[in-house]
Length: 421
Image 1 (cartoon, rainbow, N blue to C red):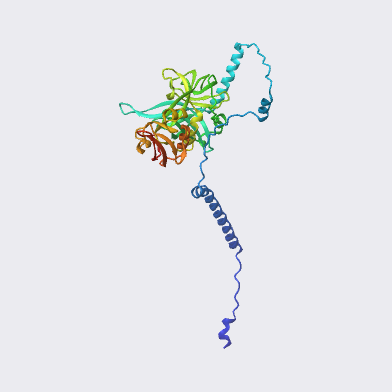
Image 2: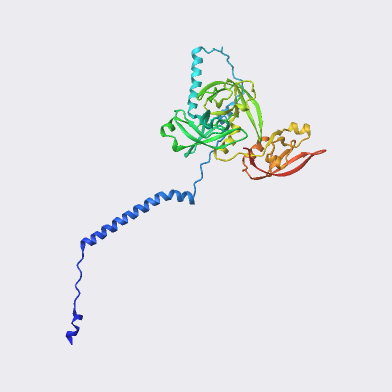
């Protein structure tokens, strides 16, 4: 009976460990782990920027042009002036005229300022594809100048005129070192005709970046008659040409839709198609050459629009925003005008553009705007500033007065802000 259960007394023999196979499995596991980690890391590196851009997109760097404050005398200097009670002795010395060598030295210094400014001047080429009478395609080019006004890190922004690139199939920009890159139109203002182009920073070599510069938009508030200035860009129709001269008038103004601009005239004779900028002896831009605004059409003396008054428009275009438009030609109702003509203080509507948002809203010539969105409007500058702070398609509430049979009648109106193409 015991022999029948003999199989239950068997002992199991442990299978010997196959060390080679175990080592091979370990190696395979380590290799697969390393491979998985590498693939995961690579995937993370590739997808992280895109995921971050999707879930938390970075805001584009905003461009701003701050108007320099007027310089004030130091407090100590003011106190010293107040302490002076006795008049100082004035010594009049005989003026010594400049000889030719001194005059040449002065000219050399002026042109040195112009050559330094050349670093922010670019040549803008408008390339068009046309066809002739035999339906053969050919390429034409138009050339103007532009000014580098900002470097956002991702792109360079260039100020030029819209007419320079009108109808372009492609736009090319050539820097002072002769290197040419592709550019694109960012925004333009249909009112003034100025435009901002953008160039990808990655398309500009490090060597070129070392040779170019970003222009400084100075203040044109203190520009006076007789002030020495330079014209850079293309004042005589040739890129990188330089002219020196003086301001002959700083009181001319031109009235455009929704804005009035001061025009500086000079004694510099240039091309009828001149473009570029007017700079002071510090190399700061004080005016942008727009010959379409030249008050003396029969002459070829250069004229420029005050840069301080253009900064608001340039800032909008630089940040890829359209310029708000209502379509009113305006002027300030001064105290004297208000008293002599029994008119309310505010902004007088001289003209209303056809098919403009203002005309659709019901404005008429002779209306006087007194408030925008509840904020008082006393001078034309108030109207211009408030309009630039609005956005296209926004409904704006405007308070104005219209002349009745015996007196002005207060009225209110809603207008949709547009954009001038």
